[in-house]
Length: 310
Image (cartoon, rainbow, N blue to C red; front, side, top):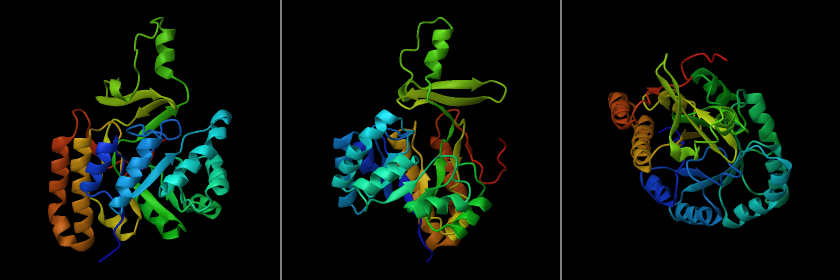
């Protein structure tokens, strides 16, 4: 029996935390919008505390996202927030900004750190650079091919996390682009709410592609028109012993996440324990997910099998 990767998911509230653990997740990533990027839900301190208690009762793990881009005024708050996370005994902090690394070293030197900058983890030298600074894991960029991922894992001195399912971010600006555009149009901000719940899309008629777009405390986010799904292509990254498989649940219902988590749990277990049975069932997994996909969101394999064109 080979090594099983961790199945990591992103719940949107406390109800989802319990349901996704019950569906087979090993770990969750949560956090507060002020400090973390593109989280399905905003977990304030009390909720982080409760989520950690739920996880630890079940022998599961909680990672808190502190991967936003921090300005001077927020940097002053980091020590207090990290102290709180240490007190609650979360399992790791996810960071991109060295300010978080420096703060954790000072305030919670035993806290595990996972390096995630969304786009710049594209080679093992950089992953190992952050490893030597104290990171225990590198979250790889979504624009890498399967071959590149396998090569990074072979040479990485840190754990490696890869997104296997869900939408990805294509663009982020610290500016409130939708609001600025409406103002420029003289429409006096007719779009009152521009957050995730508003379900706004940029529509590309030519390609029939719909890009979800929303604004929050971290600016404007434009997301991919398709969802990654590699539930039928797990062999290579499991054999490479990639440490963590992430399902991103942003802009998805808990019902959807529950079903997808359970399917990946089954697929991962079979791929490790009974490869033949996995080979037989994998098409069925894709068909089951296709049936529950939201309208207009096609499944694809992201950049796993194609060149990145910038």
